[in-house]
Length: 322
Image (cartoon, rainbow, N blue to C red; front, side, top):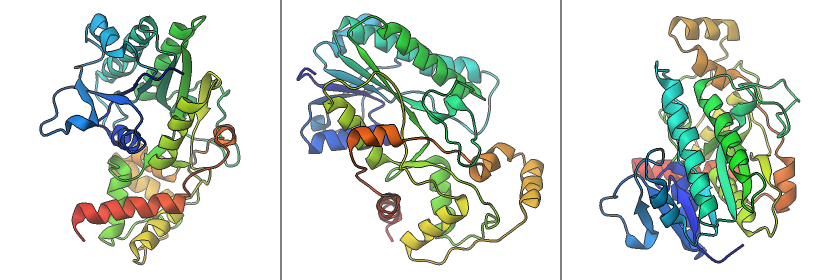
């Protein structure tokens, strides 16, 4: 791979910040693309405003990518719990159109590899116990977000077909770590305030991914001389039940977990009455992925889930100044 900078889209997002911080630490040349100027941003972080990737002039994109060695495409519209009537159009623009335009510009600029952050949900919302998703499983997206990620993957593969640019797709489960938002942050807050959680009777298996492990995977794919093109499922490699996740978070916080063993049918009924069926499914369902191939490529996993939770809780404490 050339010595040009690595272009990181979504550089101000949760994963993007962690990746750019690691690049700065290791002195890897990079440029972080952001939508607009960042007030008070440190110029050393190499942040460059680019606007909306779905509508930015392709000539401008090509100019930014000129001389780059790789693109790590993290930007996009994330899954939202509240569905909207125009979800399909919004997800298509942010995740499909933007990816296709960026890939075309990267190809014209001579970029040699393109890493796309996708989701394990392209295979579906849940797995049977002991039968994890594999990278060669068929697509089975269940919502607008997952469908847009399927289309983004296909657009990238089509753009790279019979060219020198190598497409590398990372299908991710829930990613956690310092700076995490969404449901994981909500769970951290609930455990910390010692709320009673009706999750004690839930027995499931969910794969998670510590952001430090994801960053290590991206670094390895950038450094690998000829990484195999295609898709990789990435996770910590140790699935955990939601009940045990609560216990592990509480342990990292050095407090006692407050779990109530409410029969699952009653929890499901309460979720239905409150319109939170989808949220419960993400908490109580099983979703496992076969991440053995990616860790075989790296040779080892840098961080254990325990390492990841300790780092996340340390960040949470600093955020709350306690």
